[in-house]
Image 1 (tube, protein in one colour):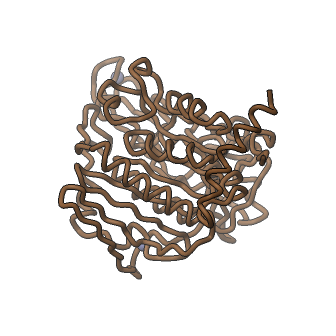
Image 2 (cartoon, protein in one colour; image 1 turned 135 degrees about the vertical axis):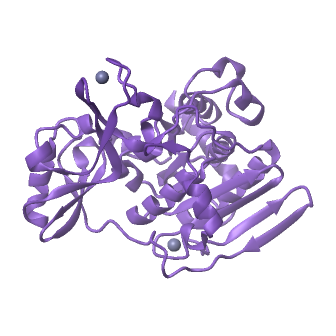
Image 3 (cartoon, protein in one colour; image 1 turned 30 degrees about the horizontal axis):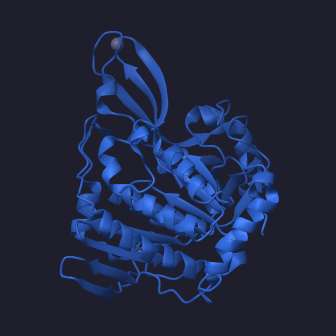
Length: 391
Ligand SMILES: [Zn+2]
Ligand SMILES: [Zn+2]
């Protein structure tokens, strides 16, 4: 059985090996690649990774397959309607390349994926349709020291561009006032999201997704193979002209996205079992006391009804919708209490998982002697699933 598999694998690689200098077996087989967003673009990116014989691929997307996705997504079939996109895509990838080990993670990457999991990746390829998530990913990938490759399409237009940590400009460097306005243009009320907020959707053509994803995967291959990549230089594609262009971007010395999480220290703790107090205790030798966990999002701690009292919430602000303020007891509008930091005195007994901290996260702890980032290393994947069996 394994002999047959090995022979099939060897055939794949024999042809790929002809791509002299472009495709190196050991690099591709050992690369840990993350694909964030499994829509039209993400499907094409994943298809390319499978055909190039990548082995270790993380898929992140919170959504399920809808009928409207089928016309633009090479990995989805009609029978997949209603299934999580990451699961439908992972199954199709295994069909396409049985040696690929996809790790499907149905999650909102901003709030539900531990930064420790992203930090393990050698490159992140974005198949996103949200400007806000791209902005978040740019800051986060830079802070974690992980290269990322952006891709975007609109009708027959598209672009692909890589951003390398420590090699600026970054995605945010070139933001204009208009960009900032559209970034903050999330409909909100009382600082909470609106339930049926319509996110501006733009038409995606499968042809431009196909070309942009090819350029993205090429950039990722260059990053992984250590070939020269110019950070922030976009390949711009216009299939309707048709026209191809390369465009750089300017470094902005005032850009606020250039911080790094340093040092990151792995601690043998897990989000499901360690308390706020326990984590702060682990940080104390590095930062002194009293210390506090600085959250990377505003936490809605509770809803307070003047008639019925407080109800715990413990969820990131962006995931709580305004409509939830209505008190189920009396119908009055409640107020939301926000929190940005957790202290041992006030929140010491709370489990990290119970206050919305994802598994394998990296958390910032500040104390009088400085700042440290602690990685919840007990949540790491079991080593046997990380091991790479090169053939
Ligand atoms: Zn920047
Ligand atoms: Zn009430």
